[in-house]
Image 1: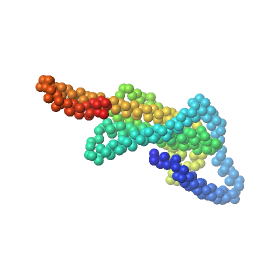
Image 2 (image 1 turned 135 degrees about the vertical axis):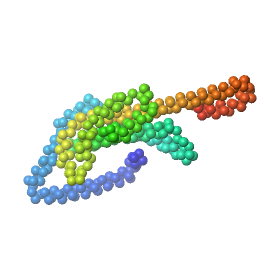
Image 3 (image 1 turned 30 degrees about the vertical axis):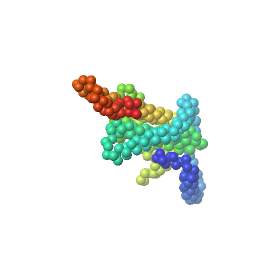
Image 4 (image 1 turned 30 degrees about the horizontal axis):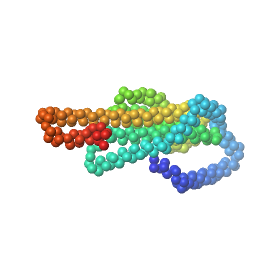
Length: 331
């Protein structure tokens, strides 16, 4: 996904995609014109169908009120703009760290070396952090499209994208029932041993996730309807048009905003968790360093202040310092 995203900066790649999209649009236009010509034999019926399909999209009053509250009270546009401004830099940095960790794993595997448990934890958290970043920017892009829509229909379509993206992200992050939750990103994060560190207070994050996912199970019908044009014999388009008129724009936007913030909190949480793992590794190295040095000191004290023994043990002290000592010693 990261590699494909970088290709979007390639003009030829983007132009090819735009050309293919216009070709599809042309085919749809031809089919649409043909269908309207069939309906044209009964103009009153045709007009009746068209007018009924439009009446469910009368959202202007509610939309203006929602936009006013979202932009003025919550400063939604500014927050989304700041999120998108930092998107590429954050993803590039995160991917670089993840790629380096993959190279280290491959290096160890090629030499039949055992991969330390702490290293596996760090690799997992870096991957989860990158997934969280992608989800966060997906949500931000869908909100940005809504805020810059030029018509009611376009706003409704973008609101549908916000809804789909939000539901998919929440399912991945936290899940809509116990079974799915057991495989979620949150379950993987809190399963890390260091997550129980009292300095890492995840109560607020989990409470927000519980709030946002409380109605995911009940809302699966709408999610399927917004994600697919039809399912087996069910034709979703008329129901989707009707649902557009019932959607609470302000509620959807505020929930999407909460999701942006909780993704940001999750990213911060994983960074702090990585810090706890690193700190624990340092403490363990120091414990082992002190233990080895105590053994050498004990051996030295048994033979007295023997200069030859001290010289013989000096390389061993240096070796232990390189493996278990502080950063300066290892360098």
